[in-house]
Image (cartoon, rainbow, N blue to C red):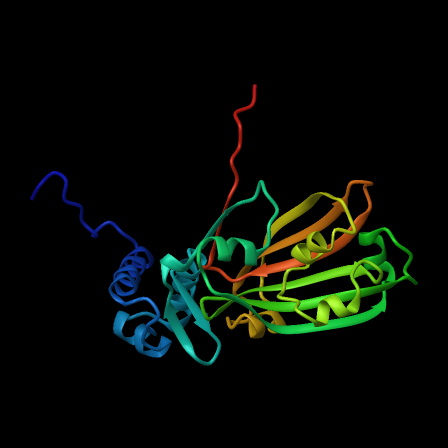
Length: 246
């Protein structure tokens, strides 16, 4: 045996399962469905719970995607959107630059009073009117993000959200030119998908999604938009370029 040859003898059963799954995923063409969980678990000699735990790791890496009641699919790594977080731009702008087909699916527009929580986030009175814009963005025939923007009612005319709106509130605000934007303050976290989010981006409830919670400021310091963005794993690779400190 060569000194460079490795052995699986010292691996744990869970590590061996990871290797076996990696080989199965690598040998399956992008877009194809894997065997069902009962079939995979039986062929690999593990419980469905153990298999599901291992598969979450591959889903987090963007290699597979599980769809509730449909199955698990191998993702096409050529359809990923890789983006730096130093510049604020919409999914539509990123996808168009990469030559990907992007479109909006579900769209919901609701008006109400701000209430205490949203009032604090937008720094307005709880009695002020706000508009909540919820939509699903599709890229290359896959739902990749569920976006929610909440704005004071006077920021965008309703006609602009009905006629010709393609899904990006940011692009719409920039296009109208009524506000001079300064910056966005964004909090990034991972969270389990609720039933509503999982349904809209076609994944399993409880699976982990990336969450961006952002505040959009104009140059005066006023917050004109609060947003929550939920990104399906496997389609986005975010990076940050950081300078070395002194």
